Each structure stands twice: as C-alpha cells, then as structure tokens.
Image (cartoon, rainbow, N blue to C red; front, side, top):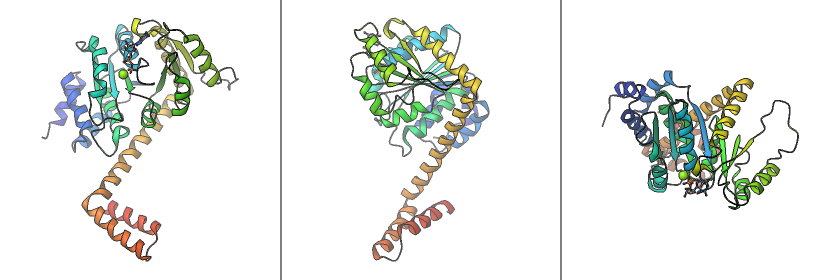
Length: 319
Ligand SMILES: Nc1nc2c(ncn2[C@@H]2O[C@H](COP(=O)(O)OP(=O)(O)O)[C@@H](O)[C@H]2O)c(=O)[nH]1
Ligand SMILES: [Mg+2]
C-alpha cells in the first residue's frame, strides 16, 4: 500500500511516534517508497549522536540502554533506541525481554524504541540499520542508541558504524576471550564492566586494561579507551558512562574524527545499497538467465570467469 511520504515525514519531524514507526517499518520491509523517504529525510539528518552498544547476550546491554535513556532524558534530550538482531528474521522474538526492560520509557513521548530484524532482506541489517538511524535522526533525536543482541561479525560491523562504540563486559563470563575473538576489543571507544556488584569486576577491569594495552604509551592526542564499572540494574555508574561518551564526542569533534567517522559511515551505507541492488539484479529472472548462459560457456571452455563476470555486471547495470 502506497503511503503519503511527504506527510509521513512531516509528522515524523513533528515528533509523532506513529509516523516514526511507519517510516522504520518501510525500512524494515525494504519498501520501494524508501527512495522517496530517504530523499525527503536527507536535509534533516546529521544532528543525532549515534552510540552503539555491543556485548555478549545477558551482559546487561538492554538494562544499560534503558539507564542511559533515563540519563539523557534527565538532560532533556530526545532519544531513539534501535535494538537490532542480525541473526533473526523476526523483530521481537529475542528482543522481547528487552522491550520489557524498556517499558519504563514506553509512555515517554521523548523516546522512540524500536527493534529490528533482517526479514530475509538481501542486504540484512547492514543495509537497514543505517536507514532506520536516519529516520530517528530526522525525527529530532539528539541521541540514538543502537543495541545489538550479541557479538557476532555483523553486530560488530553495525556497532563500528556508530559515532561512539560502547563494549560491555561482565565479570566471570569468560567475556575477555570471547570479546577478543569477535574483534570487539578493536572497536570499543568506551568499555563498560557491568554487574560490578558481582565478584571479579576489578579482575575484569585489570584483564581489559591488559588486553587493550592501556599501560602502553599512545601518541599524544590519541584516544585512550575509557573503562567504567557499572551496576546498570541500579543505575550505578551510568552517569560516568554518559561522561565518558561526552568526552569521546568532544575529543572526536576536536580532532575531526567525528566527521571522518560519518564520512566512512556514509560511504559504507552507499556501498551497501549499491552492492545489494546489484545482487538483487543478478538474482532476478533476467540476471539469472544471463548467469546461466555464461556458466555454460565457462564449462564449455569458451569463456573465462573474469570476462563472464564483466559481462554479467555490464548486463545488469545497463538494463
Ligand atoms: N547483578 C546484576 N544484574 C544485572 C545488572 N545489569 C543487568 N542485570 C541483569 O542481567 C540480565 C540480563 O540483562 P539484559 O540487560 O537483558 O542483557 P542483554 O542481553 O545484554 O541486553 C537481566 O536479568 C538484568 O536484570 C547488574 O549490574 N548487576
Ligand atoms: Mg538486550
């Protein structure tokens, strides 16, 4: 069903939650109207500060996100929350518990909370998450918190696209090794050791210090990842997390890093849309027939795979 995009965008900019939700649904469903939506949103984007939260399931991401929402709301900021689950084709499922933890904010008109899954779209969340962030940005969110379900490759990719990446760990979860494996020790700007009410939090901080090489010297002006201990379920340490985020943001602005990151994010976004469009064209009937014909020539030895790939790309891009 076609929607009145101009009207929807206007309503979203006025901060109407239903309009924001409709726009994100268009993103999630890969609607053909998205071109129109993104064109209408473009002039109104670029204001939101995007924070990614990554960490093993159960570490306390949703609890921390909820506490961060409260902290930012206390500052009068409008906050968007995007909970993304790259492993699931259904929004909801794994994130149901998160919704309950977020229910404190359900009636606050200054907070948008949305969970998203891939819905089997070829581009996956790498394709849709940045567009959902655009919607929240244009809707006037000062801060957008992006929570991923776990620490897999696609989660790390999504988190690394944020302005600031927060990596959460908890004592006694064997998190260190897992984190190192998933590569999240390379993406964290701020590290949170949550569940500091449990034994071993200080040991986890020490281990983290060691793994991050924080004892080693860095170049002057380099960012030293901050480590903050929290008890998210009681809101303890959350103020320090906000402080660490603000510090990182200020550092990025001072050094031009924020612009750099946003340029990189935009480039990745365009590339993802382009590659996904290309892949879709190859998968359509036309492209499929072409591919079949090329495969026959390769098997017959009358064509090499590079020349065939060139022909395929040329064929699907000119039609
Ligand atoms: N003891 C303790 N439990 C916590 C803390 N933060 C969160 N939890 C609990 O840990 C569980 C998982 O939290 P959740 O936020 O859903 O983790 P997520 O999977 O990373 O989003 C929940 O039962 C929370 O109540 C904390 O600081 N201390
Ligand atoms: Mg969660």
